[in-house]
Image (tube, rainbow, N blue to C red; front, side):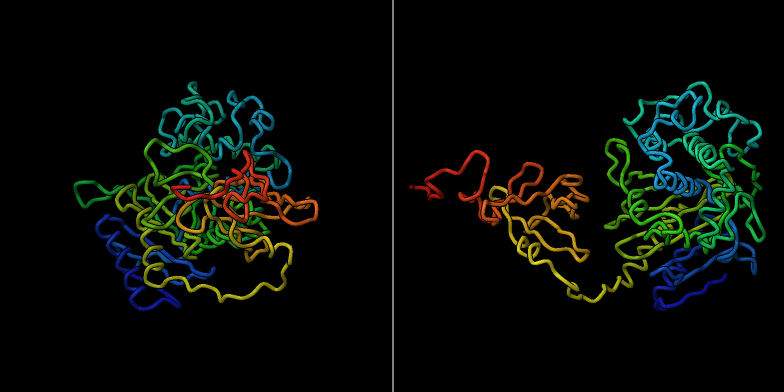
Length: 460
C-alpha cells in the first residue's frame, strides 16, 4: 500500500483510501491506483496491490481503453478550430471511399452515426490489428445498424474512422499527431500507444476462484484511436485539467465546453447519462460528471470531472472485470466534494460598468411571469425566472447591439432591445417573445394588444 497527499483533511484522506481499498478487495483486483485533483493540483493519490511492496504509483502505466477516444476527439476538434473541416461535414468530403461517407463528423464523435459497435470477428480487443489492415476490415459488411442521427449507439469502428480522418488531414500517423499536439504540450510523457516500464500487466480473475490468467496486450492497428493508449494517474490528471478549463496550446475553453454538450438522443428512459463529443456525461447523485471510462481485456479505467466542485478523479486497475471502476472514480469525486466543499471566490464588484446595460437589469415580465435580468461577472447578461425553475439563459453581446443566448432554452436565440422614438426602452424581444417592465404593460408593443379596461377584480 502506498499513498501520498497534500491539502486534504485527514478524514478525507482516510475515506479516499478506504474507498479504493474496498474496491480492490471486494473487486478482487490484482492492483488498483487512483488520484484526485483540485485547483489543477494533485491533492491525493493512493493504491492497493495483492503483492506486498509492489503497489503501483502515479507513474505506473495502465491500459486506458476507450479513454483513448477522448484524445482522438480533441484532435478532431483541433482540426475544426483550424478551419480544416466542419463538424457537419460528411466524412466523404475528407475521407472518400469508406462506404459510410454520408455520416457527419459530428455524428461519429457523438456515436450517433448508426455504425456497428464492434468490428467483425475475431474479437478485435484480443487479436492483433494486422488481421484488419483496411477500413473495410474494420467496418465489415453490415456497416449500418441505425439511421444516422436518430439514436446514440456506441461505435468503436466510428473512432477508427476519426483516427484515419486525422491522419488524412494531417499527413502523419495518429500516434505521431497525438504525441505532437496533445502529449508533448501537456507534458504527458508517460502516455503512449505501447507500454513503457514501469507498467502493470493485464489479468483476468476467475469469477468463482481466487486464481488469475494473464491477458494478451495486442497492438490494435487501425482500431488504436478507439482504445490503444497506456497512461498513468499523473498524466490523466494533466489531461483532466485540459478538459475542465481548456488550454490554448491544445484546445481552447470554448471547444472543450462544446465537447461537454449532449450530442445525440439517449436511450428511452435513460436520464442519468448522455454523450457529448468524445466525452461521457453522467449524473452521480446531485452532481453532473463528465469524462470517460475504458476497458480492454486485463484493464479498467475511469476519469470523472465535476466542474462545479473543481474536483477530478481517476482510477485504474489491471483486471478484465471486478471493480466497478466508473463508480469508484465517481465516489472519489463525491468524497472530496462532500467532505470539503469548494470555497467560493470572494465577491468583487465589476471593474467598470456600462450604464446602458445597467439600466436593463431588474425585473421583466413575460406576460405575467416575472423574470430577472442580471449583469454577469463576465460582462454578459443572465435572464431567469424570479422564483423556481423555468426558462433562462446566459447572453453575450454581438457587434450589432443585440445579444445571443449561450445556453438553456434560449441558446442561439437573439435578445433585442426595442426602443421608442425618444430612445427609451419599450420592451425586450427574445425570439419573438415580448418582455415588459410591467405585466402586460399597455405602453409596450404587446402582441394582441392590452385590454383598454385594464386589470380588474371579480366584480368589475
